[in-house]
Structure formats: structure tokens, C-alpha cells
Image 1 (cartoon, rainbow, N blue to C red):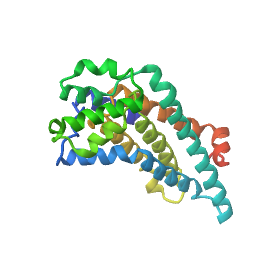
Image 2: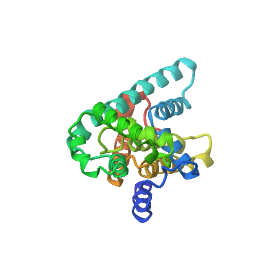
Image 3: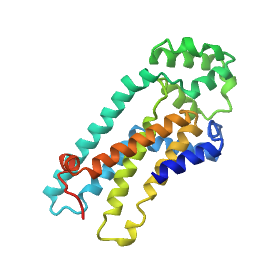
Image 4: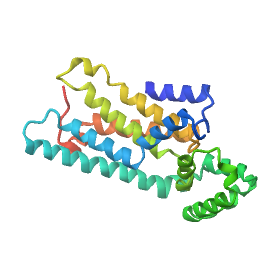
Length: 247
């Protein structure tokens, strides 16, 4: 909860939208790294780390493999299911426009085009932007190419943020594993560190222009709710990992 409050406070007090899009800017490079750390590849790596944390207190290779496999399948299912629901139902239902799309149209001097663009499907919208940007490449020379490509690839709707959901869900799992590390009492006190990373991911999503603040806060809240549901309801955690409550 504290990380959500800190994230909301930071985004409300400091103007961060589109602050990390420019070439040769260290803040842009850092924000892009953070945002990618909760993308597909970063999330897969995070799941592997989380599953390893589940096995720390297990004895014997066979038991460790069983716990790791169940955790891997369970987390992959949950994150994949959320991504599918988000992409095919939630985002199309709310129809929030990407701030990056409005920014691109402003640069192209076509701000009124936004409504008609969202009558197109995702692939058609991406192709339209690619064509226009190729035609007017001189307008976008100040934007880091990786950020521009990120905008083009994310041609769908905005609400809520899947990257932030992934980050906060994984942060809950990491924090739980750290807090319940019975071998290292000092490490237990560092359980909050994963939430610093997750909050930084949320900030990066706004900073690179991929999401509105409400998208990020909603994704973060959903990640915390689902993460805590998985970890603190014994029957659900047992279904995923067969691990009982750690005391």
C-alpha cells in the first residue's frame, strides 16, 4: 500500500509525462530500461526468479523441481490470463487512447485525427503511424528511436497498464520471499526493495509516454490485489505451489 501511495504522490507532484523520450538523455535510457524490465522478456525473467524463491526452503532436487514447475505454470497462467483479458476485453471496453498517439498526431499537426484512428484495428493503426512517421521522419529526429518503436508496437488502447501490473505482482512475490527468508534476518528487512522497482516501472510508463497516470495506478493496484490473493490465501497458494503458510 505504501508503494502505491508513493507512486501516486510522485506522479501527482512531478511532471513526468514525456520527460523520457529524447535521444542522448540518461533519464530516457533509464526509463526505457525500467519499462522493458516489466515487458515480456523482463517478466519471464522475473517469473523464473520468483519460482526459484519458492524452492529455497524445499529439500531434495525432486521436491524443488516439483515446486518450481508448479509455480512456473501457475504464474505463467495468471500473467498470461491477465494479459489476454486486458488486451481483448478490458482495454477495448474502456477505450482509453494512448498518450503517445496524441503526441504523435500533435507532431504531425493532425490532432483531430485521433477519433478516426481509433476506429481502425490495432494493426491498421500501427501501419498508419509507421507510414506517416516514415513520410515525416524529420519531425521525430529528437525522439530516441527505441521509444518511437515502442510507441509504434503498442498501438492498442491504454487502460490499464499491463507492465505496471506485472511489476507489482512480481514485487509482491519477491517481497514475500524476502520477508520469509528464515536464514537471513537482515535480508528480511529489505522486503520493500521490489516495490521500489515496481514503482519505478510505473513512473517509467508515464515518463516514456506510454500511459496516463490512471492507467499506471490501476495496473499497480490490480497487481497488488492479485499478488496478495495468491500469497496470503493459503488454499490458492497451495494450489499453485503446494506450499503451506510459512510461519
